[in-house]
Image 1 (cartoon, helix red, strand yellow):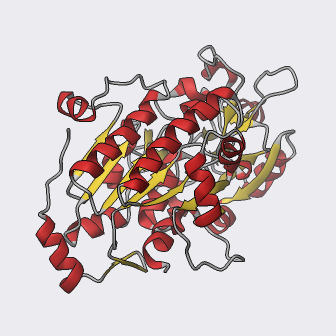
Image 2: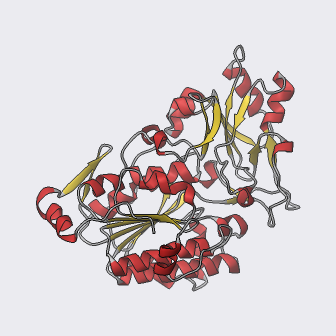
Image 3: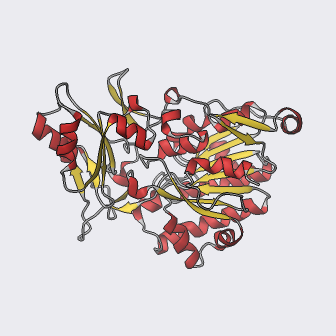
Length: 414
């Protein structure tokens, strides 16, 4: 088990009672947890998964929370991908503040396309690091290892992934190493959280699952309901151990297929190559990560870097006229509308329709690994996510909630 230090419980209590009634991070102040807080980011969880699970009787704990706690729908950040949203949740701020604008981007400093997994790309402190620095006991468990370094940056405490769990962690959790392409990868996260709560009762625990199930199975299907039944059982156990349980998602999920079940794709690099010449413009797909079996690197958000002499207005008009394209914005407008760092997006941001994805070139996408009709995310159609806390909170019913408001309401609302 990877451990980044350990704090003494007496030191935590001292800071809580004397030194640290609250912790300030990125313009917000967060109260010290009155009881252990478990924040859960359920990857790919559109609200319908919870509703269908409740209707099927698979989520009795969630049904009770819907009636007695806080049960709302919020907006995630765009692009609706894993890295920008997990970092928004743990910083309480949009990508314009924390700097993580996708899973993948064009790094002008190196002249290369790279994953945004390195903490060097993070531009602000996380809530986790701030509470850790104030003496809180922290635990972070992720499904995929790609998030571990970003989420654990600057904090001390337990921090590990299901994907790369070592022998000590496996023995502690009492489960075998799960396949990265399985529901077991997420179950390992929840099982570890229960073990950690029983042993250490961390002040704050952050959990992030994988969307393997959601990429393959729609809400209400037997496979989806089985996954949410499993999750509901672990959440009930954490609740019974005295935790405040707060849950949201990094993004929703939609089918991206035609009536015959074939993927609907706009191959944007092919289009700009045919117009401007091969490789003169560069299309970046921020969904790109090592787990291509999930989605074939096809999502609903792209950025385009244009060559000198080509106006963003002209390119935007041409791309916007393509069937299946929903929104095309020049860099300043995209940065303002979606709260993105302007130096980490292209000259254009392109968002496809709800049931359409964007690819680079047809030859560069291997879809042979898809064993189910394509379901993916990244666009505005996947922005709505659940926002759940296992107790009532005093929040204006008319307030637009963001997934990155979760720590604020869980800690500050009475």
